[in-house]
Amino acid sequence: MKRLLLFIVLVVVCVTFAAPAFAADPITVTANTFTNNFRRNLLFELEAQSVAKITQIALVIQIDGMVSSGRQIPEFTPGTAVQAKYEWNYSRPGNYLPPGVTGKFWWEIEDEAGNKKQTEKQTFRVEDTAHNWQKLANDQLALYWYVGGDSFGKALFDRAVEAIGYLTQDTGVTVERQVQIFIYGNRTDFRNAIEEGAKEWTGGQAFTDYGIIVINVEPSNLEWGKEATVHELTHQIIHQKISGPLGDLSMPRWMDEGLAMYYQTYPGSLDAQFANPLKRAIQNDTLAPLRTLAGNFPTDSAAAVLAYGQSYSVVDFIFRHYGRAKVAQLLQAFKQGGYYDDLLRAVLGVDTDALENEWRKDVGAKPRAIATRSAATPTRFPTFSLSTDPTLPPGTKPTVTRAPVAAQVTPAPAAPTTAPRAPVTPITQLCCGASAALVLAVLGLGWVWRM
Image (cartoon, rainbow, N blue to C red; front, top):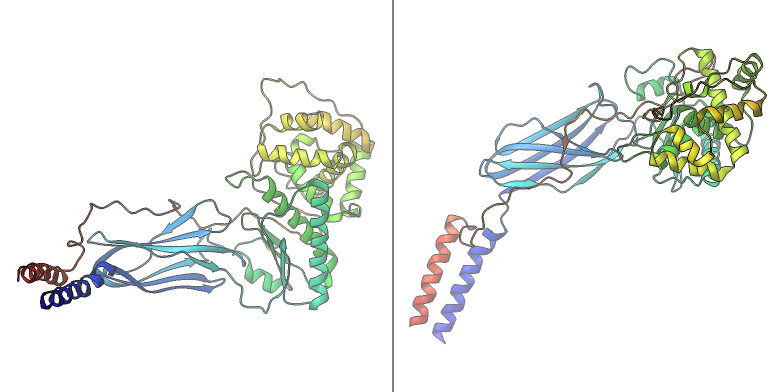
């Protein structure tokens, strides 16, 4: 019995010394924070310590909507206890992030002994805290505003929801990720919120990768606000539906803008500022060839207005002549990608030139002579990010969709990996004191057992 009791005591001693050593983590994190200072900076801060000098720290930022993550090297002084800080500075070109952006971040830490640690992923959100935002939302849309009262926000929200319903009903396109719309109620607030260097005439910005729209709509200009909101919302939804795996959209510009113009006014008619120039161009036979509207629109104001009106009219013709099911099929074909003419033939049975002449006949314009094209050298389609041309009619408050803005970062593997280490025995995992205690305990057990 005495021998058995001594054996139990020695086992308890072994466990007591060994357990903390097995559980010990050579690198520990004591603080891990994110601070939102829109529109100055975003701060990511870390405090960590290790049994050996910490020599390497990296911050990985994954912004929702972006394909790749960014690996940033923070400021810190190597040591066994470190404080690291990374500043996402808004003044740096390409670093602008609009309100509403969300993402995840995590840290990768390594010391000179080869110990490595990756922190758990944490979420963050960019907020414009200068205003007391009101919000209306459903699964498809979240609209934020701070001036104009409940009726103002509700009018914009209801018009946007209505437009989503029409778009879904007509084309089968659904909102795959909630779109956020931020309404700034005066010019000064809007300018203070958008990217530095934006054109003075900018009235709105859309960030299709993030699913975010920022617009300057004053309560006194509600009707314009409804149209501008729906126009950009249509771009967002179409982008979600047919963008490729790398986030690019392969679609003729006239189709892109024509759909946005169509739903901007639907179920009404085209606004006079676009309808009148279109009517004159039909009468004077000065319509732009449809192929020239597949890429960027003209920079001349009058020509740009006509391009918008003409794009609307062509899309309206496709809906009326071919039907809504064909429009849905055409969007799916653009998602798959290919030459514009091939996709149009596959779905509508006509190429760009034949479609144009059908449309010209429908609106009462003269047929256009089409040059013979070689089937061996089809016209390639451009690849571009959804956008709204910045040139709009004089006196009209413009909206412009900018290409998605993301940090200029170096892509990093989606999931950081740790190099494999050689197998270790329980003894080598213990600190020196615990190892000695365990050895003594084992020797003691042997001695007791022989008693």
